[in-house]
Length: 417
Image 1 (tube, one colour):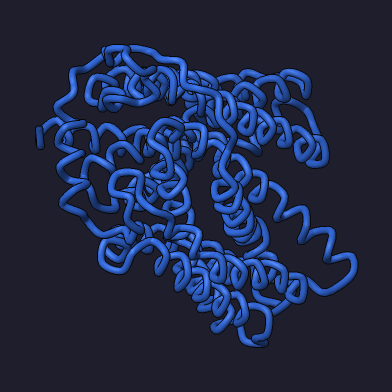
Image 2 (cartoon, helix red, strand yellow):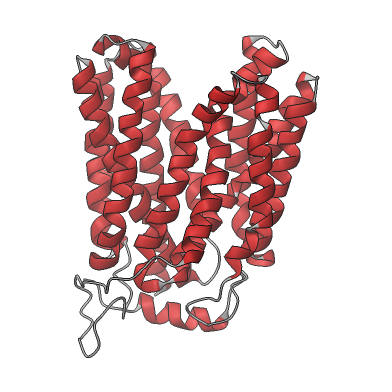
């Protein structure tokens, strides 16, 4: 039992790392792909909306499929689609071709994002303790690996199509190799009364999304909007507002992303001891303090500290929100995760654009009052994560529960589909 669960956890790590690697390889090659397609920055910005739109559509599509067929079947297919699609932008020679390829890549990314998170929730339920944040940390490490590999292959003069083609091949092979280790669909999930649970596909009953899930999705939108702001505006804020050099300004994003990754590596232990409510409440409040430093400081070192604190605070919030959505209803885990992830993804896409619009009315650092306010609201709404556990009926604290462990053992011993 333990060896099967450990293998499933390792396989889940592999899919998160693969997702980070694939997206990172696309990002690294954006300048080369833009030149090959013969488009301007403005056109590229418009085409990136197709990437986001495809991802959102994939998230909403795959959630119910994961509930019906089980993540064990959906995750490998989604991973193969995402990996194979990354080669398409490298082959595009026009704006139309690039737009179509980004739509497909976004679709694959959205499918993989939700399905692997749904399986991560299943693994976490089997472990009966928080393990979600570590998966998200490995996604970040996959992106770091992509930046290193991409930098090296570009220095060797490799074409984008060759590098992305190799990434696609590696990804498809890895997706197939990790598939047998995934957990089967959990016993009893959406099985009609009187029907035998064979582990095969089932058609879950139609149900409305609970208000609590939409509440979690709204918090995810705010938190991920803050992440999007940091990704796109942290460097510009230090360079333009504080008149730092380009090299110094680059440290702002490095500080934020490093803090995010490091924070996610330790969040599971913190959540196990203090619970997910405390992680989100204290984390979002900490992020607000970091953003306040960015807004008000006239000193470059303090601004870099602010971006670091902002990353540490935000690091554990999204994994806890996804986990809470997945654990709310075992029979609709995929659909619930897709709601939270989808709205959160829209926030990440909208954040940079909203800040850009605000800069027409006010200085950039003053525009950052918006993410600061969202952090405060997210901290205030952290109680949404304290809903009763579907396994025990008692309030969820994030700590291991003996009753949960017993249910987890039964789940792992279920026959594979």
